[in-house]
Image (cartoon, rainbow, N blue to C red; front, side):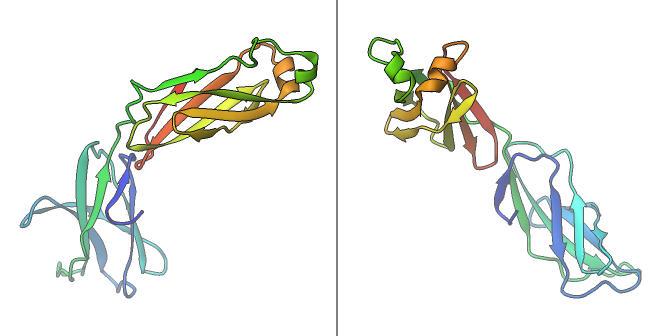
Length: 193
């Protein structure tokens, strides 16, 4: 990920590239920036065989926190090279709030019964999806007889054409709908109907 990214990973891996290969005795040290004048050593990075690419696994990051890191090359005598640009990462572990989301499925047909003709045709299922979290994208799936269908959502209503045969063969005679909300950090919440 890029600097300024948001993630729900509390143990991400930092990756970097040096402008030239390390020389004998040199290492890459990564620091967490505390404030304008203070930084704390996180640890030495692992450098690959090229001496150019490095990585460091972080751990114990807390949700709701922005972390900033810098890296620099240090030689065997302890002399510091020029610090890298600061790398910022925002940790978000809170799932989208779907408490007020309402997902409904309308009757399959006007009489809520499937005729012989309808069972061999395509039937349009409809329903509503209201109060979607504003900080997330949504993915709605309707499952009939083990097969997934992706509805079209317009405003607060959704519709999808399904196989009448799937409706007829569905053992529990229930059309299952599930909407999943995913925020920028990858956190998910869901609502079913």
